[in-house]
Length: 90
Image (cartoon, rainbow, N blue to C red; front, side):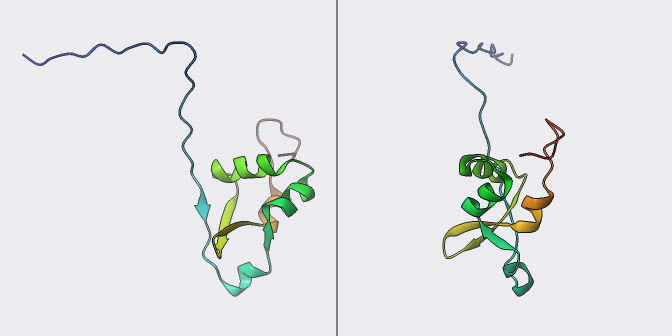
């Protein structure tokens, strides 16, 4: 007879697991003209760098990695629309 395991309930203080879904873009000469730092992206959108980093981690913004640093695409940052609030702010 197969042993059945009981599903244990969370202790209430535990939160869900956050899994990073970073989308990388291949580095090409065309992409180089569109690459900006995450700090520049934050200033462009008027939000914090941590917010940009979270959008990257959630796969909402693509990343180009150069010399171990992660950059985002200006075109994606400018065209980003947050579906949760619907006003175009990240």
